[in-house]
Structures are given as C-alpha cells and as structure tokens.
Length: 584
Image (tube, rainbow, N blue to C red):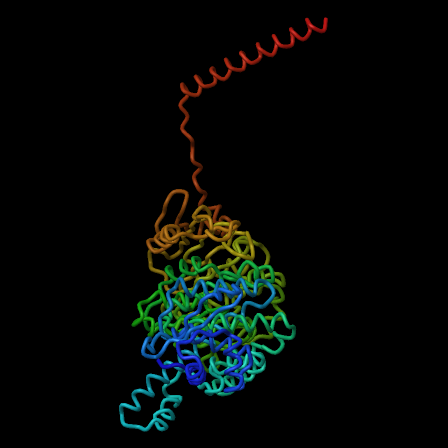
C-alpha cells in the first residue's frame, strides 16, 4: 500500500528540503507551514505517520534529550507495504490497555469501542479501495475511472465519504470533535443499519472540557499507530470483548450487567445450536449470547445460523451491533424495544418462534406486575401460566422465552436469580404450572457464588425443552455446581468457571447423569411433595469430606503435647518460687 496522499505530499516537500540530512521538529514545522500551511500539531502527526511507515528514523538530540532528530529514508531503502503489517493479538491488547489507562474512570469507555469500530471500518474501506483500484487498472481503466470504480458502494461494507475516512479526520487535530460528530451523522444517514451506533456518540459534548479534548486527541493518535485492516475478526472480536470485560467491575457499580463468557459458553454448550436453526436473545445486552452461539459452530455452519436480538437500552444496542460487526458476524438482526411489553419479532399476528432462546435478563426487575403486563402485546399468549409480582419479573421473562420457542425442537436457556427457584406467592403459581402442567423444565443448575460483577449471589441456569426425550419426561435434572469454580485470575474478589468445571456440568446435563453429591434426576412427584420448590440443595447436597484420623498417631501427638505443657508448667512454678524467695 502506498503512503496516504497527504503524507506523500509532505514527504516530498521534506525530502526536497532535507534529503538524508538530519533535521529537528521545529525545522519541519517551518518548512511545512510555508509549503502546506500546517500547524505544529499537524506536522507532528505527519512525522509520526512517516516514522510508523518506516520513512523516518528518529534519534535523541545529543544537545537536548527532550527533543528528537529526524532523518528521512529514500523510497529506494524501504518497502511501500509496511503500512499493512498485521497486528498480533498481544500488540492489539497492549494498545487497548493504553487506551483504557488513558481514560480510566474519567470518560465513558464506550468511546474507546466507537473509535475502535470506526477505525476498523475506515481501514477496511481503504483496503477494499486499494484492492479494487488495482483490479480496475489491470482491467484497462484510467486512473480516474479506476478511482471512481473502487469507491463504488458495491465493494464496501459501508458507505463512507472520503473526507470522513479516519486519516482525513485526523489531519485537523483542533477539529476532531466537530469532524467526528459530522462523520457520525453522515454515516448514520448513509448507512441506516449504523444509526443506533453513531447517534449515541456525541463527540462535541464529550469534549466540552479541555481535558477530554486532549484525551480524544491522544486516543486518535493511539489508534492511528496501527492499521486494523488486516487484523482477523477473531483477534479484533476478542479485543472488543476485552474492553467490555476490563470495564465490567466499574460499570457493575452503575447498574450495567456483564455476563461472564464462561457462563454463556456453558449454556450454549448445553443448548447446542445447529446449522439452519434460529437463536433469539430477548435481553441481548452487548450480544455475547449470540456471538458465542455463532462461535459454537465452525465457520461454514455458523453462516447458516440465524441470530435475533432485542434490547431496551439504545446505548447497549449500539454496543451489540458494533460487537457483532467486529466479530465479522452478518447474519443477525437487532431491534430496540421493551421485550416484556413490545416484542418486536412477529409472524403476522403472533409471536415469531425460534429454535433456541437464550438470555441473561435483568434479575428481579421491578415494575412488571399484572396490570402493566396486560398493556403489552400478546399478553394472553405469553403469560398464560400466571403473572409476576411488582418486585420481580423473573418468571415473566421465562414465560416470554417459552412462548417464543417452537414446539418442534425449541430449547430455552436462562441465567436467573437463584431466588426465583423457591419464592412463594405468584411466582410459585407460575412455577407450578410450568413444571406440572407442561413438563417443560429439563434441568436446574445452581452456580457458584461470586461469578458476576454486579452481585456476589449465586445465580442459576434453567434449561427448558419443548420436546423432552422420553427418558427425561416427568423428571428434572438438578445439578449442584456451587463448588465448581476457580479463582478469577484478574479480579481478586471473583470466581470463574474453568474449562473443567464447564465440561463437568455440561456432560452431566447431556447424559442426564447422576453423580452423588453433584447431580440427580428427580421425579416431578418429589418436586410436588416439596411444594414445587426448586432449591437445588433440597435435591442435591454435596457430600462432606470426612477426614480419616489415625487414632494411634493422634494419641501419641497429644501425649507429647501434654508432656511439653508439663515441662513448661514446671519451669514457670520454679520461676515463681524463686521470685517469692527473693521478695520474702
């Protein structure tokens, strides 16, 4: 790839003036200010770009260590494709760590995600342009015709005006907020699917104070240090998830929920989505459930998986859309809306049905009692087992997910508050109907404590199956996984599910396997005897480890201790006797 035009122009001017002769930054400013009208900031950016491209050597000034001496390289000395060196996973993570350290808690971390996303689509656009431009020239088109052809939207994922490409915005450091804001508005207009993403990024408001303006400038320079065109979707997707995970503890304090990917992996493994099936998340969040469902299959089969998500928070919806694009997942539909009242996925005058429904909805969400739910669409179809209390919508979410699952092969997996397994009142009525009348519950899994960033309480996973195998009918598999964890490597107060933990739980579910103190298949009659209480510890209680005691050895050690106590007691008595003699 050749140098960007604006960098190429400045390189030519500097080469004409200095050639291989060393120069300082102030000398470059003087030359480029006269030749191009550049400010000192623009000159620094140009020098930085030339250095990254391998066109510029930099050394410390021996007279002043705070300054640098620059020497240009001729084009004969370098390869023009150095701008496309592929980023390693480690380098990308290091870059993002610098960005995270830069903003700390002062700036909303979503700006890092927006900038990462924007840099990616701009770099990808330019890479696509270069490839098509070369093809057009090879086909005999003139340079002007080839350029026009290569800009055609048919060759690009998104329609990006050339003036709003990353490098062109970057040229004017003093106008970054305004130019990014205009770019976001223009791209939202030209690409309706990006509307949710870009309408939520207000760079002008973000940079109302000088400190944030400087942070934005530094973030732009940081991301400009690397090309993201050739970075694989897997590496870039992992990097996006790293940012979400890195800021999860901080955002948990503000009420945001981040589902650990180990928990999602476990549910996906148990539900086992297959090519040709549909997967729906009614509380999509940042899209993790759908992404891991996609990654559960190999690339060829994953393209035949149809993904659907609804999210009530417009900012979170934007994160999900960016997340899926970064992961190079295109076969997904996301919509905005309150799922419990206004489900957006419909087939005519009824709910759309899916093969797999998976979610971690808000636990104990309040405000969805009978009067409210009856104002929503399809309420008779969705809440036929009963209504929830004002304090907790847990069983409203479960009922919606069941209603959204087809009767042929529908499976449901939900991460939910442990309390919904045993609370009484209206929740007990719904729970009873789902278990006894329909026999839909297939497995109930108690998770370890301290898995989640926003609560130390143990959650539960419920697996429902609209088509239970005969051997599982009228039964529920209870799994007590409370002890299946390892300490989190990064967050001291958290635990996590290891690969071994996940495998043990998933294998027990898949094989409907009973293991003393860990898993047990329970007849519905027994659950009824317990008043439809699903508290896992009622049915599976871990065996207490009994320590074997060597009585002879323990007796010997006890006698030795008593002898030592006797010796010490004797010495103390002698010492006290001597004191009495001296004082007497």
